[in-house]
Image (tube, helix red, strand yellow):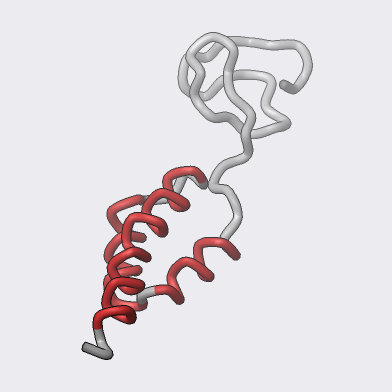
Length: 83
């Protein structure tokens, strides 16, 4: 009976960690399993991990690009200044 609350907290950490990972552009499945093995500690780990990616996107194909790029490596669109 004493194990019910820790087990529920452990299981509750699974969707919380996966959701936090998704909002940070990280693998939701990978972090789900990380939470499965490390429990609530995975919530702390994903909270400390930053966003993945630079946040700069080509205006034509919407693929992520380097902030200093003047030509999109995906669709070869030219743009004068960095985005």
